Amino acid sequence: MATVRRTMAQALLGFLKNQYVERDGVENRFFEGAFGIFGHGIIAGFGQALQQNPDFPYYLVRNEQASVHAATAFAKSRMRKSAFACLSSIGPGATNMITGAAVATINRIPVLLLPGDIFARRNVAPVLQQLESEHGQDLSVNDGFKPVSRYFDRLNRPDQLPCAVVEAMRVLTSPAQTGAVTLALPQDVQTEAWDYPAEMFEKRVWHIPRAVPEPAMLAKAAEWIRAAKRPVIVAGGGVLYSEASEALSRFCLQTGIPVGETQAGKGSLPFDHAANLGAVGATGTPGANIAAREADLVIAIGTRLSDFTTASKTAFQNPQVRFVNLNVAEFDAYKHAGLPLIADARAGLEQLAAALAGYKVEAAYTARIGAWKEEWEAETDRIFAIRHTPVLSQGEVIGALSKVAQPQDIVLNAAGSLPGDLHKLWRTQQPGGYHMEYGYSCMGYEIAGGLGVKMAWPEREVYVMVGDGSFLMMSSEIATAVQERVKLTVLVLDNHGYSSIGGLSKAIGSGGFGTNYRFRTGTGQLDGEYVPVDFAALCAGYGAETMRVKSYAELEEALKRARTLDHTCAIVAEVDKEKRVPGYESWWDVQIAEVSESETVRAARAEYEEAVKRERRHEIEWKG
Image 1 (cartoon, rainbow, N blue to C red):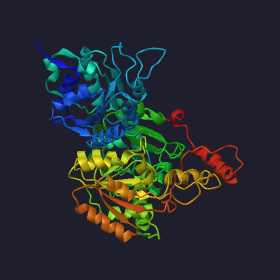
Image 2: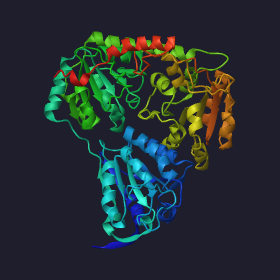
Image 3: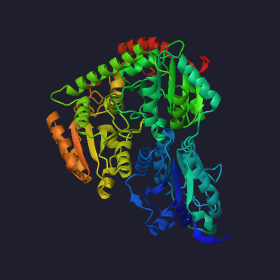
Image 4: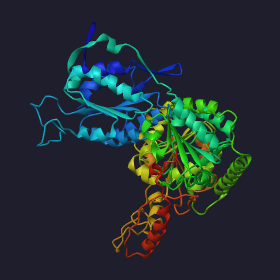
């Protein structure tokens, strides 16, 4: 067998450069490069390998957590068919990436994490940044990656690499099992050489399969659908990742079954598609939530049925409701005591459509779907037309952007009150045009995520909408966007605090305690004047062109100007967090103190005790 003598780091990079994926006959290189920050635990190993391989680009970021967010956003935008590696030294650089690993794994997005690790040889221990344990010497801070990685391995010898990388690729390219993959690289082992098989560096193509439903389950699902009077589809992220939008459109036009979209699934259909009722769940629209409440059959496609989607198990109230779960992951296909169709979303929809030839919902149901759509479009127009003074509302900002944006543009967000408002209001026209990280709803994802999305789609405008809270947590990747000449339009909404959690605090009777950016006063509380944070100056300091706006007209003009630019810009707008977009026909389970001296808390608890009675136990309500 021919061999090539390389360091472990050199061999790892040589392997990554030659990994490809293929689906439906279309092939592409899987790894587009690496994000990271060099430290002593990586620079002499993987860093040296990168220096010698300029065809595997290295992007210098400002925060290791942000690097994983950028990689996650990139892979999500590419429908999980391309990815980045993220690297760091052992210590704070590595542990900074743990939050990003959780984001990727919870959202089921492939990222490869390569944190440096403590020395495999122990004669020099404890080395810098080593966590010592009196119970053993094989523990490092990198063990913190284990619960948030879909695959974890520590390579204590260079000859372990060939086995580890194949397992890593198996997980990264799996439609059902993907997420963060962590290969912890001891800093001494990275530099050690071994005679690697030459075949390891040859081109390898990983086929991404389209699993089809088991015939008996498909027949049973068709039987259930034919028997249903008020079926509804819940479209999740799996519709987008399997590129099933056209198949879903054809299925809905054939059967007349309406669709409610989850946060991850928004954009599965154009907003104006005859079957699209918009957002479903705790942040949903009236029509989608009423349809869900009355449905006698729920067809859940590519969704993990989280509490926001199910409105904490209150969304589906029909006593006879049943679930057909089309999902590539067995774990999700069995939820809610559903009939499991374990299959790729596109392949499953195509086979379901064939099995349902001649079936269509009743005309009266179709008429209700049309009425719900008309009512919601009118409500959206009403919210967009409101002109608040002297300070803008968040709904106005979304409306202004909606007016200026083009069908191919992408809006991105992750946390705060914006996800709920965008889920309801944003009129997505193309798959991928709505990018929401809501599996983990990680504050700080937005700007780094925007960087990754723009790198995935350089020809599309990317609008990053970020609240002041998330901005203050992680805004440094504006500098990276400027450095790489990657154009972002960043809309910073300054509402002087945490709008979402402040509203939730009021809803549970606590009055917004601890959620405002105010000076501390003689009362001992943060109830003084607002702390003056100059977000425009911060953005300008990173190198972005910056515009301040105070009125709707100024905002619209700033957005129009932003489209003409070829570099990153920021638009800063003060908004009133008390001028909220309403909730519609839904609820979310947030615990409220059972005993309190506060009258408002006691009142909220009384309402909670009534609302929680609507929660269902679908898992034990099997109706086969």
